[in-house]
Image (cartoon, rainbow, N blue to C red):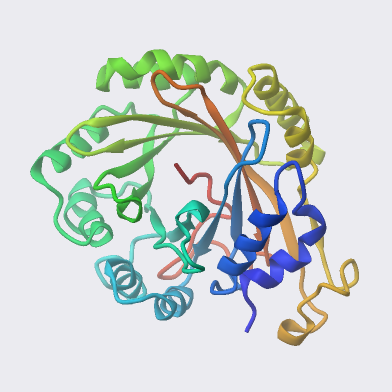
Length: 344
């Protein structure tokens, strides 16, 4: 059976310093053995100088993928959610795709950690369905009244240009918070929105927002209980890969100049995109599983800066890998070509 570990073996020449250290790569492979290889994976790498954790995410796009993944999980609210999402015409069917993120630093004694679950929303998702059906399914129970009210107030305050794109359950990290990810705000609008929601967070975010001037496809993420917690993420990307889009390099140069990214990691991230086939990596290709066909694509998904008051900014990059897309939007569980956000 093809697994994500097979693709990591194909990627072996690129899983090197400064982004990856040998111990981390070994743990990633151990984790990836239990994950299906038909799905896109993403490696979350920290960009500050020095060795840092790397996390692995997996995107599920179809009902079959959801059921197959559920069979690999112990009985839990996550397993129940995946099976419910796979049910054609069920209450969770509007979800477009699901991401599972596995934090490597929560892996103990070789056991895979419970995944953080992220759901991509349909366009114009009804707030009542969101807070009354989807989020309770993700959280394993009804939302507390205060949290539900706060989420609805966050949505009510969005300008017409913005929309809620993803929601996350953080129960795997022992948090009852729900993460909201907003699409469609420019840097100045991000600051204005946060000013209206929680002014105390604005000074920390004001340090990061200028880094995203001229960057496209911006996302704002924050965690909600009955209040907005002091962790804000801003991420951005471009439609084209670095070889065809010089603004990627300019963006990463700004990150280097701000001190949140090392020059070596910048170069490694920009060199990531490409592809491998049996003909480029015959000795590492999973011939027994898929024969000499197919390809393993490598793409730069996006970069993120995390802001927390009284802490230094933290920058991350998201490196996608896996087989090419076989279909676009459609059916019970589908999504766009690349997820644009995850993580702590």
